[in-house]
Each structure stands twice: as C-alpha cells, then as structure tokens.
Length: 397
Image (cartoon, rainbow, N blue to C red):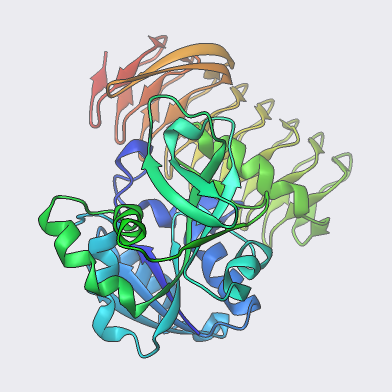
C-alpha cells in the first residue's frame, strides 16, 4: 500500500512559530511532527510515501531526502497554492500507482497503532477519535459502522467523535474532487460527505488515544509533555559532580550539565547544550540542540527550541521559546490562567506561560505575562512588562 502525506500547509494558527518553517517541521520532543508520521508508516510496513509539500517546502525535502534514512521511499509533489486537503490530494494523483492508498495529515502526531485499524479496514475508511472540544474539528456522524456525514467545526457538537485526517481511500475519490473544488469545497471531508450522499459506503474506525493535533502555540507545551511519557533514561553528555539527574531524563551528546543543577524527569535535553550551574529543570520540559541556560535559572514544563539562550536567574514556566531567541538575565515568563485573543477567537486557558517567537531578543529583567505572544524577531528593551500580542519584528522600548 502507498501513503500520501499532506505536508504543504503553513500553519497560520501556530504563528509565530511557522514564520520560517511549515507546521509539519515544528519539533515535538526534538523531532519534527511529520517525522512521527513517516516513522509510523515505516513501522506498519508502508514503504512508498508521496509527500505533498508547499509552504517552505525546502525544509521538508532537505530533512527527509529520499527517505532512505527511515527505510522508506519518498516522492515529493508540490501544491503551489494551499487550497485545502482535497486539492492537495489531487496534486498527488499522478504519482499514485495503486488503486488503494492511505492518506494522512503531516501535522498530527501518530504512532503505528493509530494507523492499523484504518489499514485493516476493507472499505473506504475514516479514522476517528474522541475529543472534549469536538467543535474545533470535523465531527463524524455515524449509524452503526458507517459514516453518515462529517460536519466541519460545528458551533455545537453533541457527538464527541472527530475526524483525525487518517483515511483509507481508493482512486474513486478523484472522480469527485474536481466538482467539489468548483463548488468551493476544498477539504477531503467535504468530498467524502458528497460521496456519502451519492451512495458510497464509508466506514469509521477508532484510532486510539495516541493521535494528537497541534493547532495553537500553547498546544506545543502539551504535545511535548505527552511525547515525554514514552521516553527512557539516556545520558550521553557530561554531567558534572554535584549535579542531580532524577528519573527519565535524556541528555544528548556534547551537552554539559554543570555542578549544582537539578533535573527532574521526564525531560529531554538535546545535543551541544550547556546547562548551569545551579539550574533547575522540571518534568515536562524539552530543550533543543545547542541551547544555553545560564546559572541559577529555572525551566518548568517548557519548550526551548534550538540555539536559544536563557540568561542568568531567569524563570520560564509553561512557555515556548523560539529558535535562536536570547533572553537576558532575570527574565520572567510565569504561568497562570489567562485569556488569549488569537485572531477572531478568544481562549480561556487554565495554565499557560509565554509564547516567544524565533530570533527574539528579550533584554534583562523583563516580564512576559501569561498568555503573551511575542512575534518573531522582536526586540524588547530591559525592564519591560509584555502582555497581549506583539507583531513580528516589533521593537518594544
């Protein structure tokens, strides 16, 4: 069986973390989201992958190459304009050799166990799971084993079953996509709903709890915490005397943990990092590669991406710090409940910290309030308190 992986989208709702990379290349537990998809396919025995790329496609293609490192064969097709999942699938039509194939979103965390129920099904199939917030997804209505309809983001949703974007399809779908696109319906779910109305039988299968979606910036914290549940202790770096490493902690090659540090797992620290002295890192934290966390700082349940620097005596809680950002000494990113306005949506978050985009320079003794979103490449002068949303490239004086 072949698989089509949809990896062309930008991920606007994940700004400011998709300024220089597509959503599928955001790291969860120091691996791009789409790598989880590729590995899951390989584990199920699916070796032939057609990957639909578009926004910042070079970052995806250079990372995976021909797929040989993952024991798969990857062919790339380009969706020049991101016009939805059905349009993306249509782009892959000429690259498919088989009548039956799997389709997956490249921006969801999946494991091989999530794919098996759909692969084993003997019909066109939609993978579903339960959600506490079904109105943010495509809600799957069903009667017995068959799908009746898929309703995208209903205002109210009495059913909790949602569409995961994992499909087993046949070439029959290509007979319906052009008409749906002409009608302004660009999603695969729209096409499947149309097929159901014309008499096509479509099954649904539960894919289990391992499936995970990352939609908004604060979801990055939760997704990383979830990914840490499966790690085992592995220390490949240098841990100095009087540093304490408790529980399931991964420390990468060429990383130095200075004296007096206390790291309580589950935690991942990448390669080439310098931590400490006297730094505390709590469970649920993921530190990327080539990160420096200076003396007497605290990192709690946070994600710090590659090549970032956290200055002395800083405190980072339930926050995300983008690639290559520099936080001066005494910077505070506390966490608490917060109301976040994101576009035309309002979110009441129970516990969140700050979202700091890539390439930012936050100077000493600033406070980034819970729920604040600092755009990419911003500069914030010392002793400032930041709340709300700061646009990319802003200078706060």
